[in-house]
Image (cartoon, rainbow, N blue to C red):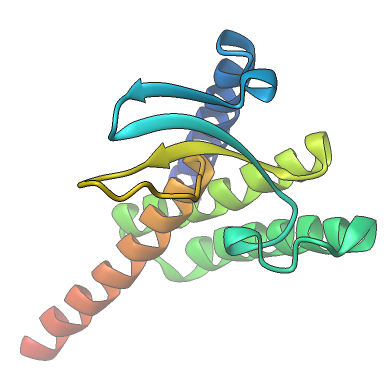
Amino acid sequence: MRIALLAALLALVTDQLAKWWVLTRYDLAHVGRVEVWPPWLAFHIGWNRGINFGLFGAGGAAQRWVLILLALVVGVGVLIWAARSLPRPIDRVFAGFLAGGAFANAVDRLQYGAVLDFLNVSCCGFRNPYAFNPADVFIFLGAAGLALLAVTGDKKRGAG
């Protein structure tokens, strides 16, 4: 359980420090956009009041609290599942990343009323209109890592 908690804490702290840094160092809340590595990376502020890509973003205060509660339930549920069902440390790391990302976005909703997105990645002449944040990266890494390890673990068990 300790490994999952440490991974969750790493994800939460990394996300919150990155957000604090872009808000204070670049005054991103007022500037709006900073080209970091044109055309590949920009800090582009976005306040996500909904879920992925701002879906259901006009739900008001009740929705905010539902999304906070949902993130907390998912995060705690993933940590409990990791403690009870995941014997390998790497599985617990990925579970911790997923939970920590969920907790970090819940902290944003508590602190700002919305999730702060600021990472904007574009490529090859396509300007991406969407932004994301480090918590989203940890959620993706956690979910993808657990899925990949589940598939490769099942193949290894089936072959033996």
